[in-house]
Structure formats: C-alpha cells, structure tokens
Image (cartoon, rainbow, N blue to C red; front, side, top):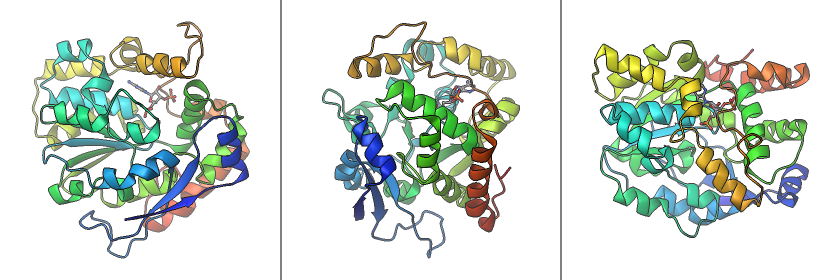
Length: 331
Ligand code: A3P
C-alpha cells in the first residue's frame, strides 16, 4: 500500500541527534479513489516519523463513521481554533461541556500513537468510545488519510495559513515541545526542503485546495478567521447544517477570541505542554513554560524572518501554487 524511504540528510541527521524521532518519506503505491483529485495526480511523499510508517496501513484502513467530521490541517495553521469552533457548532453550543472537558478528550488526535510512543492511551480505542457525530483532528495529507473517508464522504474542514507564519509558529512549537535545539534558520531550511514532519506543507495545502469544491469539503484560512470570524462561523454552520440564534453566535465569537482561548484551560493545550515537559524531563513553570497560544497573529513572521527567507518561502509558494491557479500567500 505504501513505499517508505529512509531520509538521511544533514538536516534530518542533526534533528535525530537532538533526540527528535527518525524520519522517513511515505508514498502511496496504489490509486486512491474518489478523493476528487485528478485521476492522474501523482502524490509526493510525506515526511513522517519512522514509527508512523509501521502503522501507515492501519491508519489508511481505518473504518470511519459516515457522520464523522474531520478537522484537517498542516500543523500550526489554526487546528485548535478550528477544532473548538467545529466542536461547538456540532455540539449545540454546549459551553458547559466545553469548559469542563479538555479539547484533547473531546476531539481525538487521530494519528497521535503513530507520532509518539504512548503506552497508556490508544486513539482508536478512544474513538470507538466516542458518541457520534465525532469531531476528529488530523494533520494527515490526502495520501495517508483513511481511504474510507472518500467512500463514505465524511465532512472535512480544512484550514490553512500563510507558510511564513506557519514556519515561525512550528519552530517555536519544536523548541517548546520537543527536544529540538536548532536555530530558526536551520528549521526554515528543513521546512523549505520538506524535511520536517507532515512536509510538504505546500502539497498538503494544494491537494485540499484542489478538492475544495467537493460537497464534503470546507476550505478555510486562518487569515479569514482573524479578519471575519463571523463569516467563517456562518459558513461552517451552513456546511454542518446547523442554525443558531444571534446571541449564541455572539457568545461563540467571544469564546473563540485569542484572549479567551489562551486563558481557557480546556482549550489552551497547556495540559499537553505540561505532559510533554514531563516526558522531556523539563521543569514546568507557568511563567516560563512554552505557551501553545503564543501570539495568534497574521504576519507575526515579519518580526522573526529575514527578508531573504521571506523571499525564499514566497518563491516556493509561487512555484507550487501558481501553476494550479492558487494565488494564496505568494507575496
Ligand atoms: P502562533 O504560534 O503564531 O501564535 P495549531 O492549533 O494548528 O497548532 O495552531 C497554533 C497557532 O494558532 C498558534 O499560532 C496559536 O497562537 C494560534 N491560535 C490558537 N487559537 C487561536 C485563536 N483563538 N485566535 C488566534 N490564533 C489562535
């Protein structure tokens, strides 16, 4: 079903020497039907941890429920934000439950066991125990997702973000939540040459953009959510066939604001950060710990990326997106 290639480059060998898992590139070998992509579409390989490769087939063969709702993103594109919005819309705006149960329990991270070794928790078991309709989080690209999604036409909400902000956010995530100790320049080189997990960012986005008009796909952007969250909520409600009163929507907009989500212990992922600090044997102190809800801005990269890297990322974006008519994030 898949071909797995080991990756040994200066970039990946250095990451591995810092204690981050070994990486491989995974290519699908067979045709994947009914995705909405052109039949002749050639999938690029996806960079994943070696442990994922051992389970790739299991993930691709996972049996979904028809009414599952999949929140799919490349990491750092606003996954948590979109998850919370989606969960609230699906669950009749149940603020009580949202405020009492952590987002990681309400929405299962589908491939987590393929990314890190976890002995005491199994995503498949957690998913089995959830009532329908389930909202499921994944960062998998089309080529690695359960094939059953395309057969059963599950709803997919895909969110993307400017790669310049993504790379900066991802770098801070790596420094804060993994053993990685490289510089931002090294990180960008790795991202640009598709040598970090879930890379390529560009093909991840492009493929979902190409199927954006499918009935079961809603394609949104972090920038649109920042600019006009109301409109994105309205679109999502329509997509999920839900209707809410004006005051409920206003309450949701407030609940989803950066400040509220950052302060909300069931949404801010600090529980996850704390858990990773334990694994990394770091001392967790509120004042100095990595903040998952870091800046939440559009264009924050301008303070951290050199002009040279801005140009390099824009060039790569133009080279991959423009031939397909996608003109997002090219400048
Ligand atoms: P920054 O690191 O740029 O601040 P993900 O959930 O995909 O890992 O994305 C995390 C990014 O989304 C972080 O970006 C985080 O601050 C931002 N984010 C999360 N919730 C947000 C919200 N309610 N409003 C704006 N940005 C949010």
